[in-house]
Amino acid sequence: MSRVGKNPIVIPDKVTVDVKGLHIKVTGPLGTLERDLNEGISVKIKDNQINVMRKDDEKQTRSLHGLNRSLIANMIEGVSKGYLKKLMIVGTGYKAEVKGKWLVLSLGFSHDVYFEIPKEVKIEIEKIGRAQASSIPALQAIIDFRSHNKEMLGAVCAAIRDIKPPECYKGKGIRYAEEHIRIKPGKVAGGAGA
Image (tube, rainbow, N blue to C red; front, side, top):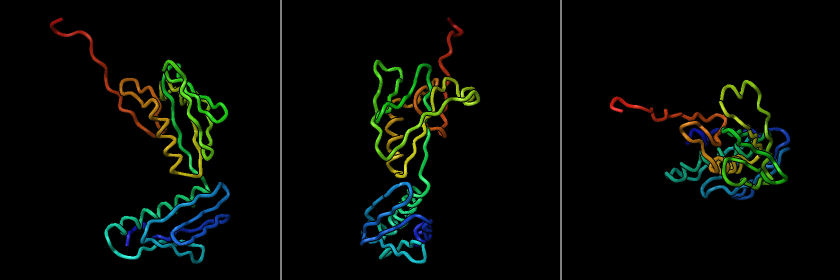
């Protein structure tokens, strides 16, 4: 058995799980998520726990066993607690603001970049404290992204980071809060024979 797949998932209070064949629906205080499971994977709910099982020991089915268990666990955690990701905007003069359903980014281009915010994602822009500003030079904004849908949250953050990925000489651009950027030294002027 898959080490991940055989672990039971505990269903927290205020979360309901409905299984119809290969379709699973999870409802909680933060929203509702639905997903179709892969062929050969089945789900049994007993004593407020979900057990994910597979029909055979073929390589493909074994590999999907742990995946489906993790996806269901993420759905349950999402509708009960939610997920948070942080992006940092680094660069002098760069800024971000929320206008209605749009995230407006000024990133040194000749125009502002407008990114449409999905309904499931909530965005909040943090104020920069003195300690944060001193640890990362030219830190302009920290954007908090919250959602109950982990997949959508990751996709939105990745799309925004792709607008202006951090460059390697000054670290300017958009990066994840936990991301470490290795800064390269610039060219050294002058030489022995100059």
